Length: 316
Image 1: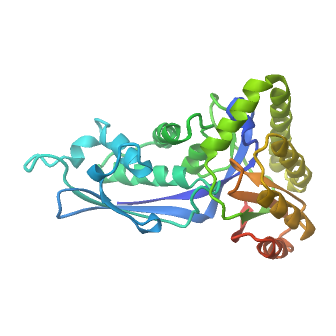
Image 2: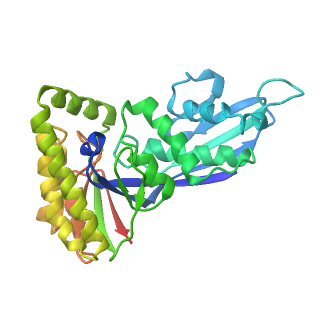
Image 3: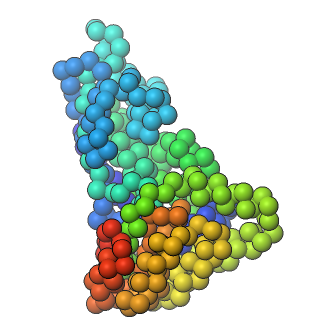
């Protein structure tokens, strides 16, 4: 059985979304995770993920390992676990799991959530159990909590539904329509940054000065709301200024970095209409709004400024 999942990029609202404000995110289909699950003549569940140099049997991995935790979560379900048991031999049947990904790890493109979603779908299909998007999303969110502490839930949501998402924590997920296609250039700093750490640092800032932090979160939330309306009404050109405003607010939360600021400035100098960091910050990716005619120039400007890769994607 095979399954795939796209990457994702947050347009607006990162960090503030953890505190109940809205965020916007969109799938990035130029990068993806592919999972294949097949029977194996060997007893046990074997995992092959050459991208991270992982070739191991499930029982040899700690239960909180990012990939093992997903498999164990599926195996613990009464709906799927019987299919993985070998009644004659006892224990687990022979299964080979192959994972291939073009999504950079710890870069803000949703690598972990994409692996979880693709793996859950492939394993459940292998067990002849079709899961709804809501069920997949719920399982993927449980995995996110294991590895990110208090995640927003936006990564697993936009990747599961593979649609633009307007997300407020604790409220029903809203997908929305794009009134007019627009182009985003994603620049990768090449620096791995754990979302859990930056989320934790913002939490400590909030505990020390909640009044100021709540004001910043309110401003970011308002930007997200205006951005959604601009996208739906077919006026994506308005997103550039909103990106610049959002980036400044994220800088005040201390989640940017010299490398991110450098790429944001390089994108603007190369003709981008606006730019900001995307995701947890401290590394990972930034995004820039560009006209289709100038997107390549923006990408080249990012590479010249030190980006490890630049991805041009159309949000349609």
